[in-house]
Length: 494
Image (cartoon, rainbow, N blue to C red):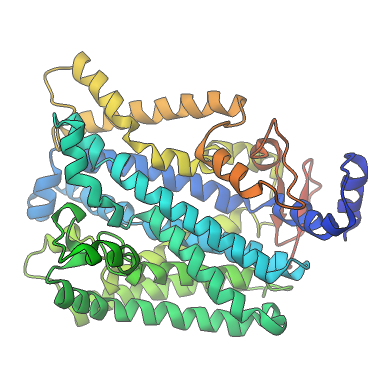
């Protein structure tokens, strides 16, 4: 146990029993530290979701962009292309989640955590998140019941139409299943001190990523043949069921094949993230790690474009490059490559930056990290926009704010600004109450209930002070200058 951890335990007045000691040490000394890049990127990603969802829901150029994108003016065509690429960056959530998951699991096992208990806790949380996800897709998804009710349907009619959205696969469900699958694979790989076989583990997950991605079209074709519907591109309310047994079995089969983010190929993003996270757990990180990461990212982008032009081919209907739901092979590689470049750049600016000014970095990233702390809550409550749209409908009745594609682009941008400002005000005020009763708060209370060594400050369950206000940053290089805030240096990267 490090001296700093000993000191923190001796000065906080924590009373523990001997059999709780090791778990408490791990909890305090490892999980209390933060990878600021990923905290910020999680928040930035949820901000992007707010922006692009509103644009896709309300902007009146969306139908034209989907059917004939090259008929748009150049400026709007650029906006359309960026919207498609970034709106489909749900893989970024999977990469961030898997990097953090594999990193914390690895460090916990190294510090003596029971592998089996750790695996069980991960699987339990994944199942809980999945079940909540089914509720979210039916009652809170912006395209399901909230949209129907806002459009004039009765609540009863909306439920009758959208209850099948329990089968929908979105980012939340992908993350839940990724947690379950990744932790299970890692549980077996870490037997007999396998946690230290980093290269072997990384190669296995890399191979799994490639297998998932290249098998995805075949899995989709097989599912289409069996169910007589293109399941990955068929919205759940249009599904055809073949008997009572079909309703039950699809709950467990559909995550791998269902609209609009089936695990084949979305697990590919997850496993790429696992590889990246495993490489960050090495005791000594090679000097050119980030440079090599950038080269890999560029290589994936080139591979994706080559696959599009010379293997898959440009479709006769050019709109298919914009309207896809099921991620084609070329896009998985293109998007992953771009995401690796972004994450590598952030790591270079923060965790791998010997000239970092941590005090300034904490201030600059605070806005994004605040959204990151509440990413699940914001994502689950995106339908909050309908309240704002209803208000705008009363103030500016010349436009139909509640209708799909009812606004000129300038008014969609205005709505985005208003919605972001409303969320900013809500989160800033909520922060003063330590985000009490947020989904993160609720899940943390559930996860830590009756768990030995799980110490919870009743007044700050999410540890907003330690996570957001004054976090102890994890760095991979020793800063040149003296820092005024707490930090921990791990593997030397430069």
